[in-house]
Length: 85
Image (cartoon, rainbow, N blue to C red; front, side, top):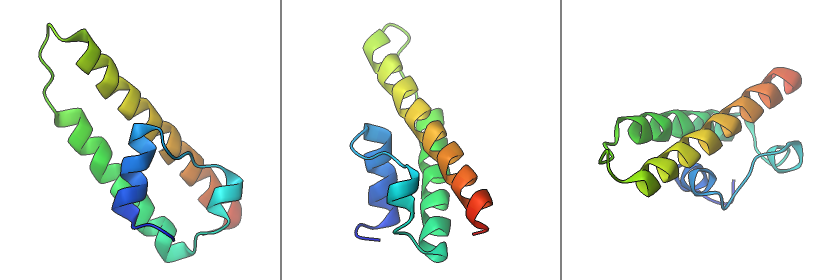
């Protein structure tokens, strides 16, 4: 992996990186394990972050991050099940 797993998860949440079969081919099993763990940690941290009720832009940004992380987790899980990793 060219970047640490925590950095890749952060870039996924911000929308700078996306997971697809082409990018996932580069990762080894231990790197996929680390990435999955970091995605789960970041998802949990994002979920528990409090957003003021009157700040709709912050709420939307939080929901976009959660959506990107959720989609990345689904793609990663699908890839791992297909490849047996």
